[in-house]
Image (cartoon, rainbow, N blue to C red; front, side, top):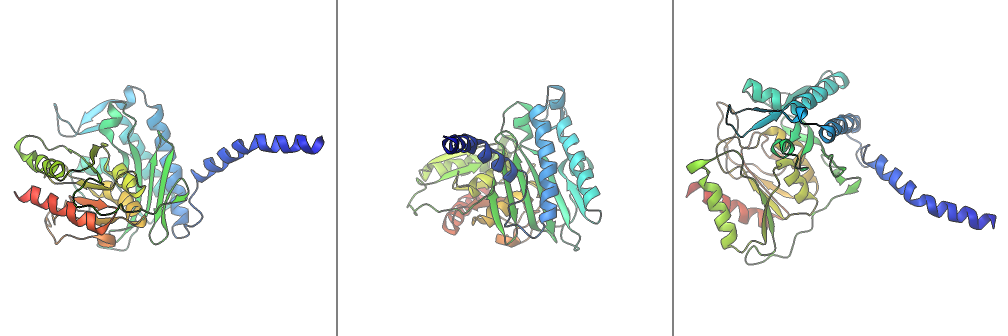
Length: 330
């Protein structure tokens, strides 16, 4: 009887133990990540504090300042600013020789710094990617904290606080979602695009200048694409392709407010380490005085790029990039 009781108790405790292990996995770096392990642990801790602020935000915390002026459409909230301050100060205290680049401070200063002119490890932070969703109470935003050396991402931490999903990637050591290693599996090639789901984003371009987007969407529909989805977060798009939830992402075809280093750093590393193919659409860069270079891909993907195609296979990446280039130049 005693043995039976102990067995029953042990079985009853199994769900609690499993939940405890999952809780721990979601708050510590995967054991496979050895390089930058301390950096990953600090970034995860800071991302979780930011995520808690996002979940608990009230109306005041969502109060919006429009980066593009009155009547604008590009928001920044008190929570964006508080999260960035928290991360910048936390990283600065833990790694005093590192540099930290944050979206909101760069937006306020109107300058994106050079990222590849020295060996100083550089943190690139988006305190809330998907602020437009956050403003409207749509739970589709993430915290993104990346670490690059000479402009090449070495560590990426992305937290979706609403679904308790944590992506962690380190260069050469894989990408992980809640501790599970990610590896994309490409769909069987098809003559059209009927096997593929494409993620994209409208960005903040409006009026006639947004016509390349319309041309791309028309081309996707003409090629019988299975689905087109807009999540409102470039970082989440990249993580979803890495996680097999979509086949690809195409973004950055217009000029105004294209994605910038804080949209790319952590997310592209997660995608690349999961086996995705990543390329610039063209050579446009968000760098004053250095506006265009030949498109780069893979590990050399330019964090100052204004555009990106991320896909589950090289073949799909090439096809979508062709459609995107055609949409820009027509």
